[in-house]
Length: 329
Image (cartoon, rainbow, N blue to C red; front, top):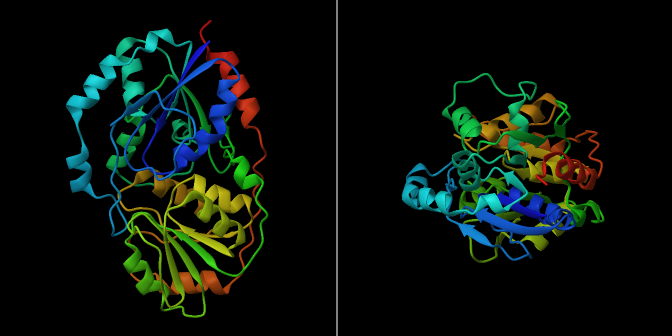
C-alpha cells in the first residue's frame, strides 16, 4: 500500500502531531510525506518527498497575522503548478492535515482524501465558536477541502472528533513545578513581552520567541529562540503556560496539569474558536480587544487554577480505523 501524508507547515502544531502519526502510518505500507508552508520551527526526522511552498500565514509582531508579508509570500502560479504535478493516483490512501495543495489537487483530479486534523473538527456544528462575522470562517472551510473528516479537539463534541494527539515525548515527561512561567506567543515581538513581564518582577518568565535569533535575559525575563527540546523542558517544569490560541500547545499544557492562559491571534478565526472553547471550561482568555493585559496576567499568576481533562492515548487505534475505512485496495 502507498500512502501520502500531506502536512501543513504553518506553525508548529501540525508538524508536532505528524511526528507522532508518521511511525504509525509507516506500519501500513510505503509512506511519502508532503509538507507545504514556511512558518514551522519544528522539523521532521523522516525524509520529506514533496516540500512545497503552499500558502502560509505570516506571523506578525503585534498579536496578529502580518497581512502584507502574507500577501508577498503568496505565489498562486507556483501553487497551481504544484497542484497539477502531484501524482496522486498512485496512492491508496491520502491523509491531509490541513494542507491546501494536495487537498485542491485531489479535488481537481477527482480523488478522495481524508482530513486528519484539528481543523476537521470544525465540520461539526457542535464545536463551540463565537458568534461573529469573520472572513476566517470562509478560509477555514475552503482552505483544504476534503471528503472525509477525522477531527481533534479539547472534547469529543461529535462522533468523528477525538481528544488531542499528545506526543509520546510529552506523555513521557516528568511534570513538576519549579515556579517559572513558560510563554509562547509567536505573533508578538519578544521586546514587547519583556516590557510587559518586567512589570511583574517577582515572577520568572521563560519566553520562546520566533523573532529572536539569540538567547538573552532582562531582569526576570529569559528569552530563547524557539527550540523544541528546551520548550518541552520548560513546559514540564513550569507553573503555567501563556500561549496563543493554537491547539497542540494548550492541549499539552492541559495534559500536564499546568495553569493555562491564552491570547488568540487577531484576525485568526480558528484561534478565536479555540479560545472560545477553552473559555467554556472556565479558562482565562485575553482577547484582541483587551488593551491592558497586566491585570489579567497578574490575576492568573496569583491564583490557582483547577481543571480536569482526560486525553487518553488512542492515536494508534484512530490510525488503524482510518486505514481500514478509507484506504483504496
